[in-house]
Length: 284
Picture 1 (cartoon, rainbow, N blue to C red):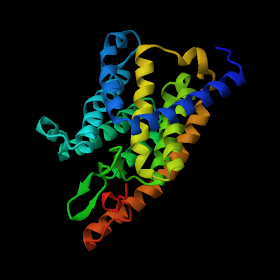
Picture 2 (cartoon, rainbow, N blue to C red):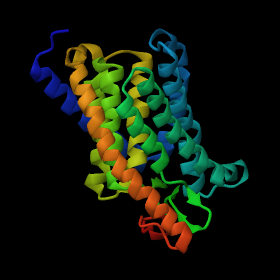
Picture 3 (cartoon, rainbow, N blue to C red):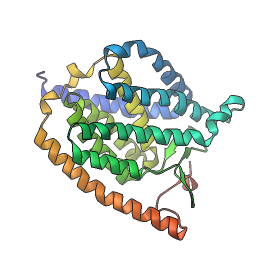
Picture 4 (cartoon, rainbow, N blue to C red):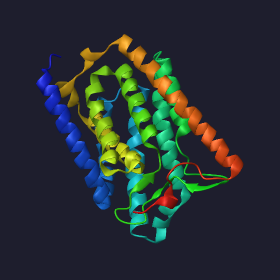
C-alpha cells in the first residue's frame, strides 16, 4: 500500500498521543477502567474474522481477559478496601497471576521468534523472561509487585529503566519480523508505554502503561483493522535489518542478564536487598 510519509507521521503521532492520554485516564479512573475492559470482552464474536493463527488468538486471550478480570477488579479491591468476595482480589495469587501473564506475553513471542528463525532476538526474549522481577523472593525481604497504598490504586511493578528499554527494543524487533505490516502501529504502543513512566519519572509504572496500551491495541486489531489503511508498514520489511537488530538485542540483553543473575545470587547469599526499588520504597 502506497502511503505518503506525512500520513505516517500524523497518524503515528496522533495514535501515540492518544495512548498516553488513555494510560493516564485508565490510571486515574479505576472504575471506568474496570467497566471498559470487562465490556471489551463482549466483542468476542468479532474476533473470529480478524484473528488468524495460534499466536494471535493466544495473545488476544492472554491480554484482554487478565486486563479485564484481574487488573481491573484487583485495583478496585485494593483502593476501596472492599470486603466480601472482593478480598479474593487482595491475595497474593493476583500478583503471581499477573507475573505469569507478563512472562507468557514474552514467552509466546519468543517461541514465535525461534519458529521464524529470528534466533538472536529469541535469546533476548529468554533473558527478559529470566530477569522479570518476581513479586517476591524467598530469603529477600523485598516485594517487587503490588498495588499502590493510595489513589488511584496503581499496579506497581519495580522493573528498571534498563529492563523497560530492553523489552521495548526486543518487542519492536519481534513485530518487525513477525508482521511488518503492523510495525508502525506497534511503534506507537511501545513508545507510549516507554515514554509514560519516563515522563512521570516512575519506572514502576511501565508494566501498567504496557498493559493498557497493548490491551487497547489488541482490542482494535481483534475487532476491526484500522491500521492497514492508516499506517501499513509491510514495505518496511527487511531481513538484513531484522538479523542485525536481533544480534544487537542479544548483545544488549546478555550483559543485563549477567548483571541481574549476579546481583540476585549475591543478595540470596549475603541476605542483602537487591539493588532495586521495591514496594518498601513506595511513597505514593
